[in-house]
Image (cartoon, rainbow over all chains, first blue to last red; front, side, top):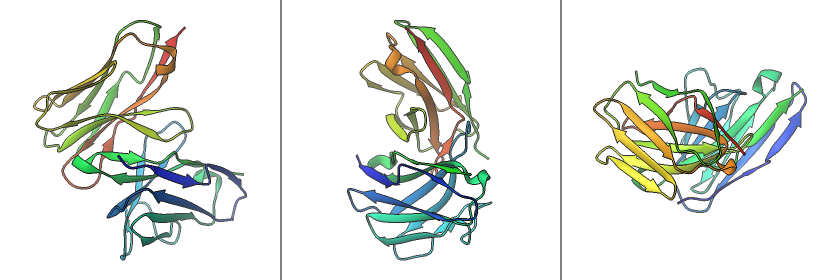
Length: 113
Length: 111
């Protein structure tokens, strides 16, 4: 199994600012995934990040709002830009493992005031 | 389009009871199905993974079954404990790299 860590674990940010979330995996992985979980909702995929190429964004998510970096096979960042209260969510990093089992980080709980 | 439904949305049972959580999916062409547990404000913990060729998987007090042809999976929890209180999420992998989640069942075990 993969062990995933995220920083920060939680943050309270002001409207209009940006927050960068870090995701670190204990093994090399080809693809990393970023999810958003709005209050009371299930998980929604934001984008898939491959090392050495641009991230692939899902419908409804754009690079200007959620820029992603993937500098190597164990690390990725997600930035939530120009935040509004609607961005208050849990943001989760995920990777796939053997047999296509999915693993998730502990999440970053973001509150925008 | 694959859709995943979990019933019930919420469940409260007394400690010690056995219980079943249900998951259904609309397209039987899946690669695998995974059950997760999520504690409030936290990330997801993988509980059980069932490949499309398998019928069930067991881990401790948990047993997950899969009936791919009918588009159903169940998660059976034996001898429930207050520590089992959490939201349980079912997710299917249609065959590409993206998994599709249900909305979850919020479980409360009453001491």
